Amino acid sequence: MNTVTPPPAAPYTACDVLIVGAGPAGSAAAFHAANRGYDVLLIDAATFPRDKTCGDGLTPRAMHELAALGVTHDITSRYTSRGLKLHGFGGSLTAPWPTSPFGTTGSAMPRTELDDLLRRHANAQPAVTMWDNATALTPETQHGRITAVTVRHQGVEKRITCRFVIVADGVRSPFGKKLGRTWHKGDVYGIAARSYCTTPLSHDPWIHSHLELRDSDSVIQPGYGWIFPLGNGSVNLGCGALSTDARPAKVNTKKLLELYASQQRAAWSLGQTTSVASALLPMGGAVSNVAGPNWALIGDAAACVNPLNGEGIDYGLETARMAVGMLDDAKDLTLLWPHLLRSAYGDTFLLARTLARVLTYPRFLGVVGPVGFRGPQSRILMPLAVRLMGNLVTDSDRDLVARTWHAAGRARRAFSHRPLWDSTL
Image (cartoon, rainbow, N blue to C red; front, side, top):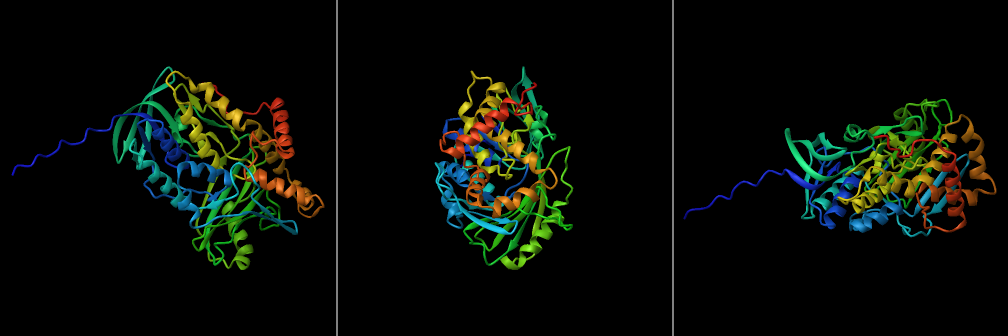
């Protein structure tokens, strides 16, 4: 019997939407784009599974977006968090996740696992093709519109034509830089280090933040230490500090992490720190040139990170959904996308950046910290802090806290000349 050998598959040369970066934001964008009928190519320079420096925490806001993707069971089946425990300045406060449109369930999952889960979930959609070990090299443009991108996939350069490009390549955003993305370090940014430690307490239902973070000379740092239980016999333990060009954080975050781990070892029966890694974090929209006629930066690449806590997964998932919803051949995203980001997050980010800058002043925390933890107003201030640190204040909220926060944000914007997703292209 003669057999017929099928012809080789035609090389992949064109897509509707090219997504650069397969972290949470990129994979979420691929899923949403496929569900809207687009043919999607999702690429990432790494080979999966791969690690990312992160605290691994998932706020209720992030869980709300993950529910829309249909992956929460894979996450909550191992671990759920009930809220925050805040420690420092001689006090500790427990603050459950407040009732909100996002729900009251948080979680945590190592990025090695979370990113691979979301990547596989996106790739399971028939309209999604996923390449790892694939680097976006050179964009071809006409009047600012990207018409094709040269991609090096497994050592071979390929020219991919596309209608739209979504850039989700993280805090450094190497492809975003080629498109003109600029990070303004004059505004507050974060420096952080994280590790993993074994512990018998990995199912503790609270994520812990130590707001009195001191270095080896007992100097208070403008940041906090964290312990996020993972439900797998370990915790993510790390620390972060706020910095500006004018007042750079004078601390080695990896050494600070080891000191913090030694301080918490007895209480948590911690093993040795492993997989220690550090990163810089642009925050609060302090980048410019995040869009062109048919392309947009999302998530960490667009500095969608809360300056008060370094949290960005929730914003990454949200901006993925928002960006896909704007894709339209008739629209020019150059100004439209920054306008949408400012409408959604601008007031919050500007005010949070201002507060974060205040925290970088020496001795400020030493004065206000004890008041927040031990004063009679602590029962009011700390739940407010949890709500802000959990990214749980939205434009739709109408309670006193939300109205006050939004009013302060609008006032700050009226007098601010700081970069906020500005376009100079």
